[in-house]
Length: 102
Image 1 (tube, rainbow, N blue to C red):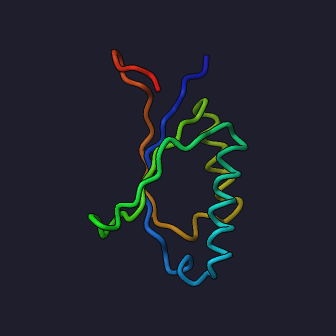
Image 2 (cartoon, rainbow, N blue to C red):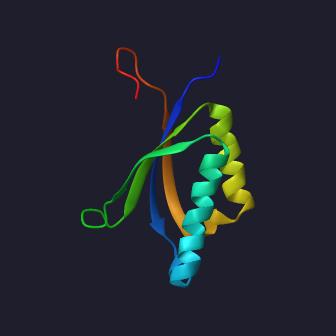
């Protein structure tokens, strides 16, 4: 039986991202969105935190149908070389006992 997995991620752009044109930056974002959709994942929220954090300027939460989908998503991002553009920190979790599911 599969269980939904939530992924909290925090990122900050690397120099490689800043070197891109605005169109290339948009392409990076679109590839990331496509990779997420390909594995059945979805964005719950994406937030700007540059106004209050120098370390993590953007963060978000994604929902995946299973841990296998999370693993497949990671492989796709790596294969597309998307990880060269951001430093990141992630945390995975499942809905807690007694807590409502989203």
